[in-house]
Length: 512
Ligand SMILES: Cc1cc2nc3c(=O)[nH]c(=O)nc-3n(C[C@H](O)[C@H](O)[C@H](O)COP(=O)(O)OP(=O)(O)OC[C@H]3O[C@@H](n4cnc5c(N)ncnc54)[C@H](O)[C@@H]3O)c2cc1C
Image (cartoon, rainbow, N blue to C red):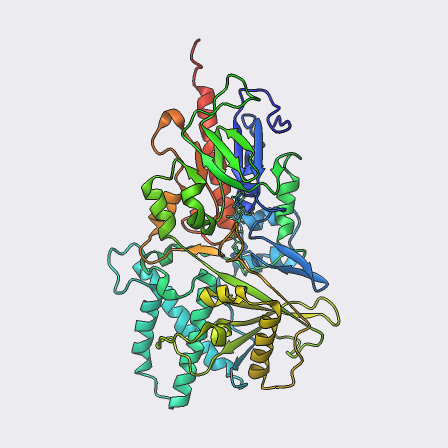
């Protein structure tokens, strides 16, 4: 690629701007910069670093993932796995054939321990029985894929309907039946974390099965997920990335002139928050759906076609956050990997709306035990989704630490349990350039809305093709909400542009 400073290259090549330096934007840029037609390529990133929702932070003497945690389905069909392997970022176990062949169905593994809110241990057999019921029903939702009619609109309502039928056949005593429902309630909350939603009642039943799970036992990056985006970034020519450059408005369908390119006109002009105006032939938008939902009215000029604007409104985008707690001494067993928390007297079959202040932490599903960072650094990672998660973002670190200390004292039955030494949490809903965690297919939307979102602009106008292209996790119909979906979407849009250029280069140039 012949790349100069901002606007210093010869005319005739295509000026491409990528908005957003997450894995979708970086993936698109990596693909494009190898093409001779992309003479000027820039990635405009609003924040000070690349990676977006892939964010690894050096804390507690180790690395923690504030955003993406696992490669979901690490096997040959997963481009994130392949790229990570190419860059040498994965260990022997992660690369092993056995690991790649494991079929999890996308379900979370069983906990090492399960504790109730009154400090009792729940038998793991009972947890396994409830997991099997719950995930059996989740798998059953695939029956409705492409169905024109479903018995109920949402996954949540379907699960509850089936569970209430099952309950009538339960023969145990009242106490065990209540406990079983409380365990199931935790599984609903786990599923909310996976889907990035407040409630499974918001997730559409018919398209739910379109989300595709790849084989492979989910794995992590020992040096941090962000090593991957750092490697992609390092492969780009030096001046491609422009940081701290939030885009304010994308003016399109125009005929813009710019002083540095006398005699040239551009169909798109990107206006940044700092007042800079960058002309382009093509812009690939990779900003999160949460940002688009909030800003779409001012982000595009002219506004988006009604159908696309409607798709942005309809597709779901919710919050899943992590809360890391640091301890000097572990209170869990050395081989413990996952601590599940079950709130007694809760049930998925009962709608309760307790006050956020008093009960937000009841949405927490439990804690993942991170590998120890040192002899006296032990870290738990809690997961919490939905409105409770967004409420948690409004609290101070001290308030979160205090609430979770109380939770841990309750579930361990040890009122003297030392408080965690420190806390770190993600706040994805408050992040101005993200506004949530990831997308899901909400009631009232289908996979067609995802395809509509992914469609370039202008629609059906061959003379002014591919002015604005759309990538990002929310634009991938079967792998939405994942890093591999995001990467594939970036590649898809880069290939779309390259296809156009290759076609144009084969056509005879008009004689002047
Ligand atoms: C808590 C959490 C856990 C997750 N866990 C996993 C997991 O385990 N496995 C998995 O596969 N996926 C996981 N994900 C999802 C995964 O992180 C995302 O799907 C993926 O990283 C999205 O990549 P993207 O490039 O589409 O968007 P992003 O990474 O969000 O990149 C978009 C970029 O656009 C920038 N931007 C926004 N607005 C502007 C603007 N106006 N101007 C310029 N730049 C702008 C943003 O700053 C950002 O850098 C998780 C996400 C979260 C939040």
